[in-house]
Image 1: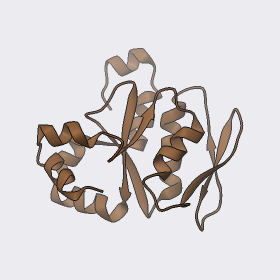
Image 2: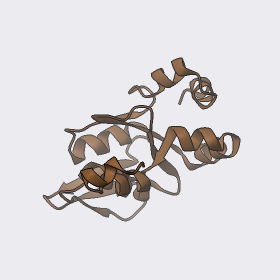
Image 3: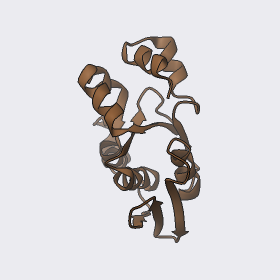
Image 4: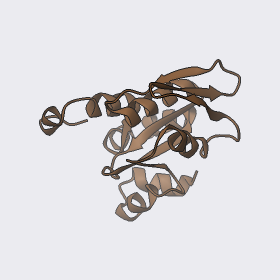
Length: 156
């Protein structure tokens, strides 16, 4: 993780914000990515072998986290990517956490993956910036699970 860049992001530096959502700093999830690609993108920001994917069916996939029991992640027809991100987040906690980097919202997501202790430091030092720049997977999944019409009149 690039600490100086993160500090600039939290301070509101527009240039740093434009750089931070890139694949060097965040897991970039394209709207076409399936479970294997999403898990691989997140796993790239975790220790080697910490997170892998097991069997994938049309309705679920298995998340394998080092030293933990396998987790069955449901794959529904609605908000599949967002619900998978939520499942991954639950599987890797309490050691790690992932959140969407909000300035890069569109056809793809930039997901910042870091240790829970780093998130605690960020929240303590800059709570307002944290709220403005990062969205929890729970809120992301809830928002994307709404109908298009409902999303027009709400915000994540």
